Length: 433
Image (cartoon, rainbow, N blue to C red; front, side):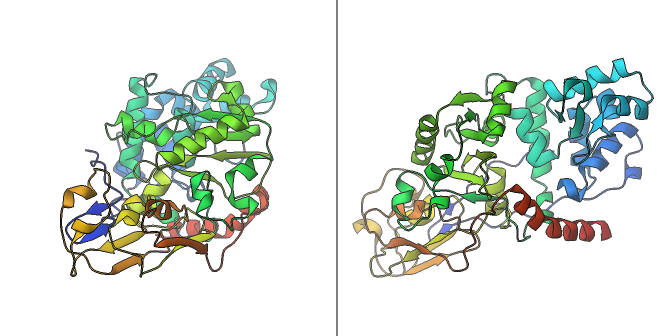
């Protein structure tokens, strides 16, 4: 299947500055009997990964192709006995697969340490193995320790098949439940746009609870670069804190850095138009923070391309327009990484007297009329404040507190507990289809 060309977060024509039409969901569920020539071990792994509790896709052509590449038939034979929740020991897998332990152990270690499709926990003599979900899980774990120069042919094909699977829109089945797992945190200049932000709203303050920090390359932008669809923005800003950082550093997939370096990295990311995320909890045990763009990040693309909010927590602050100051130049809409602002150009007036702007796709429009039409789509907004920073000359936008804001969950247990009802309901709906 040919991968679609990279889609812009914002489309600009003679009248409208805003997001493109949503991409349709194209996944086509199949039955195991539709794959008579696929080895049983691949079908078994595909069934495991398709579980709603793993937030997986239905059994489909794209999933079978992904599994058939990610695992050899022998590896799939071992992996098919694993799930995410309850780990199994190597001796249990050997018994289930009817093979000697000394044959199974090297397979499991290869899947954990080389391909990174499984995770292992516990003491070496009694390790328990688990199968990762496709995303979040395999995609990140496979690529986190890589760089564009270190990607092998296997990695490149893994990326291509994952992207083909992602573009079917299967993740829409898991959007919309009321427990969003990630949230935006301002840093640097974007904090100036949100002077009423609480400590839990600021990345600097959240980092104070940790002593260990690690950084690696952004998996999403690296994947898009491998596909020839990269945006050119910095890669080295995917960060982990606490126990996750220790684990990544010990495994050699993260580089140890200081809190000062983390903040410098995040300031640079913001300067390139990236937005900084954290998991939607106040945990000081483990955390991670991505610096994402709307054109590569799969969570943001789910909103941008499929118009499916739900993965991202509603913001604490949202932009408010002063219509008396707005000249409808479109800077705010062009800067939004989520396509949450639409500006319509089409009434009386001429753009020739507008403030000078940098060259770019918007500048190519040339002199066209404009009207006083502005729309803010709250369901897409993450409250990053980039629109306010873009409106630095007219100052027509300010950030104001959003109604109904919910603070982050107190800890991981609270987040998981609130997620369970939505996941069970989604699982029930998908199994009834």
